[in-house]
Length: 561
Image 1 (tube, rainbow, N blue to C red):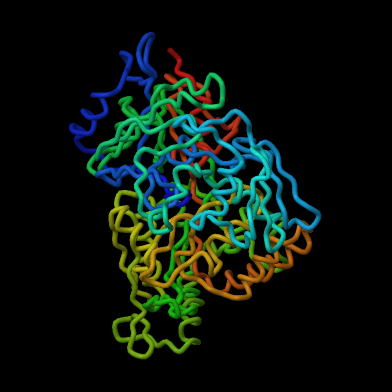
Image 2 (tube, rainbow, N blue to C red):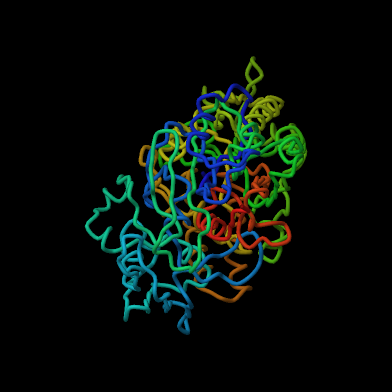
């Protein structure tokens, strides 16, 4: 999902019989099909869980393939940083924090009166355990200690001014449940009866749906007011648009080219919050086991030059996407972090001649079939996208067509979400159309740390663990050092010097070839529920798959009946 990758795609409209029957069988609905519930009925919010069916009950925040609803509704962070709008972090399990003079020590005061959903009191010891626990241990952590029940002190090797959002947005887990879990168990345990502090807890699971119910121990008095969240797995043979318009889904995020049929009757509203880069992942690093022409930087540069991003935005994304910078600074939000001489935009039109020059300068020659080759290897690659994500599927087809103009053979293919997830985490791909997580604050640091540092990747054949995102296997010691140095300063000018090093490397090497800043279209049932994020009040990132943000959203919802 990245982002925790949510399912945002419009699927083909076909018969919905089995899935609709499943949804209707457990849904309290009014006569118009809404699921808020009328007087005396149990209120149920239906959420699209994604197309990875059959669903697997996995609520482990440290494993791959966790279900939506794990982060936020079940497990909470210390503070919530709103990536959708500027503002101070929202206190959650934490109440306040402060740095020491050099930024290497953070003291956090935690919230009193919180209990885990099994009735065990939450204390600062749980926070210290979480930070010290190997699967979640922050980079450079020396120690984390609870000095009393409401105070935790963390010491780091270097200053952590720029890492605080990532540190505080991580899930806090209960020591009494996790202390006996080995590192291996932490990655594989399904955690089907998850013990969290969030507004909801696991109620029931099946291969087609899972339900979360209100946590009676929740610390926010009077919240949540929606009794249950039902997450529904919808196969690619069913139409998410039809489910929205017929009242079977209340909350989802996906791409729909023409939203008017969905929102026409006023039941469903849409809010668009473009945040996340859509890119071509390349398995770029031969030293870590990547194979194929894309391991040559010249091939990646040629692909970058031959792309007509204007056409891709128009035909694949219905002109709803934004222009991306190859520095991965979100413009204009992050303008202050664009290094001098770095491009604000990736090329918006194709330059096949420039692409071919890059290849010929690198020793490639065009064969009789019109495809470049070097040392007997043709510049031919496979580009995969998730089946049913039609904007990505269409983008992949356009990329293949555009690459052919420069003598590059790209074969567009699709695979199930589960298959694509396996490929990206194991490195068993050449090219992939996929998304990147945007940053929680107006600073590209988190992208540089998560997607471009050596510590966040693994050799091909070894799974990149949950929470790490360097699927390209990119590794550059200068970038690694610059990321560490950027984290160690609260001086903007000094940080920008480090970003200059990072941006120069990634703009040249292109381990992720930028395409667009993708639209993030969230659809919400405003007839049966109030309290949603809106354009006027983006108190949280709106998508149903939003890690941690979804927990704030569901606690703010109120059934209308």
